[in-house]
Image (cartoon, rainbow, N blue to C red):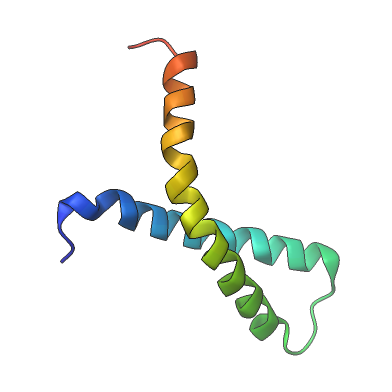
Length: 75
């Protein structure tokens, strides 16, 4: 198991993977038609987008958290 101190990194890894999978699939379906080989091309596009999404999520999440804390009331 992974130590709890790495939870934010694991969370970013899982979240970026799921989001990039969904977004790349929707984008490909909208831009093209389903054809033979679609799944393989989608997986290639997904892996590329995940490689970008993971570090972006790790960098952007703390900024987004601070912005949300500034515009919401403590509850």
